[in-house]
Length: 102
Image 1 (spheres, rainbow, N blue to C red):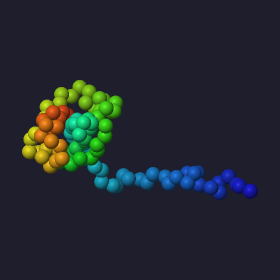
Image 2 (cartoon, one colour):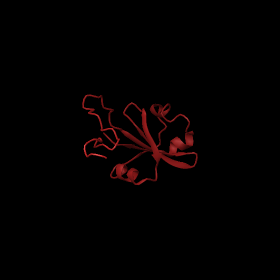
Image 3 (cartoon, rainbow, N blue to C red):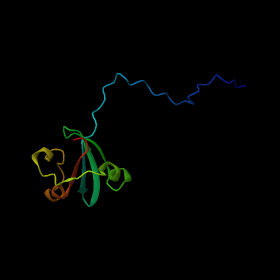
């Protein structure tokens, strides 16, 4: 016979741990919309140009993030050489770079 209280109330799912003391990753500063072999992708970067996310540029969240921001046209500067390694000069030239945090 089963008794209430003999089973964890988490239904086998571990509760989230307190991460108050864990170091937090800084927020993404740049949103780059770029063609990647015929598919538009959104890539997010920290201020250091370290990539922290990549996803389909057609999702609604991209529109929300870019709303009200004016993009820089092209990502041809030397600061983008390593972060966008693998993209052609043409792709980089047509990229839209949004600064999320001024």
